[in-house]
Amino acid sequence: MPTRRTFLATAAAGLGATVIAPAAALAQSSRQDLPTARARALMSKFGMTYPVLQAPSGGQELAAAISNAGGIGAFALWRTSADVARQNVERMRTLTKKPFIVNYVLTFEPQSLGAALEAGAPIVQFSWGIPTAAMASEIQRAGARFGVQVATPDGARAAVDAGAAYLVAQGVEAGGHVQSSTPLKDLLPGVLTEAGDVPVLIAGGISTGAQMRQAMLDGAAGVLMGTRFIATQESSAHPEYKNALMHSKAADAALSVCFSDSWESATHRCLRNGTLTRWEAAGCPPKGLRPGEGDAVATGLNGRKVMRYSIALPQKDMTGTVTDLAMYAGQGVDDIKDIPTVDTLLARMWAECLQQHA
Image (tube, rainbow, N blue to C red):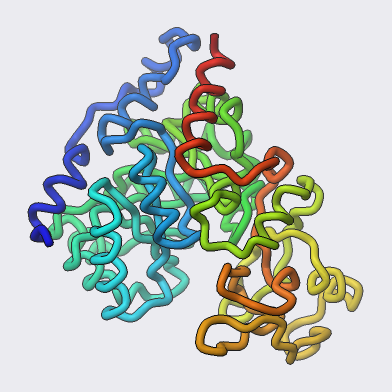
């Protein structure tokens, strides 16, 4: 196995400083140039073929496939011990030699961050908070970079001041745990103003090349996708969950606090199902009063029971009524009509993006 230093030199070869054209200069450039200057700078900076990042859901095989295909894959470490984080990062290094992201939700203490960095994680992404100066210094000392998901211009300014290498502007359209309360069209301009030369990607309802094209023309350097990647062959999501994504509409992706076990403060966007319908019919009661609260609706590996209001999504190794679990989905679910490989999906979206421009 290569040393951590060798890995970082390879995987993060594009992580050095890159000058990104200021927003004012971009406004003067032709809006017909695709990819835009900001997108080209992002792709060069991180060694990407496509200006696409993954939301941290769907398993390590999916994340590796995205990185290997020319985007940047991501997986979550915010609920893991130091030993598990180290093992996961080391495993990821065997699956890809390209940059990848490890994600931490700062609602919870990032206890395994040091172990992930020691194992060679090249990029860290934070959400639901701003990393402390100590965290930023630790990442810098490890030779890694970090990005921050933001939901307001003030959050963007704080992330830039903390030393973020990129920002993700999450709109309320997003699936999963939704930090934002603002539509992307209203959020992005203010985030771009505060970001200055720091690249900004958008997240929330992105499923097509046409939407990627519009994001770049609106000033974003790229996109972050979650739901669209869940509906791929490499995703670890349960087949019934993937099938539900293919047959759902944007109106089916409801924002609520229904699935809240282990994280009571988070809003989330999921497909409507039996659990959500019963909870809403009961008047959206709090924990302790929810209908069917003691139900184990699915069983995972090693016989682990998964409860009705868990924040866990349906995984391919689960059995039971898996569609009663949280099937996270953004409003871009309208445009999901198949379950392609990651290679096929990214190539198709990029071709559509450039074709729309032509």
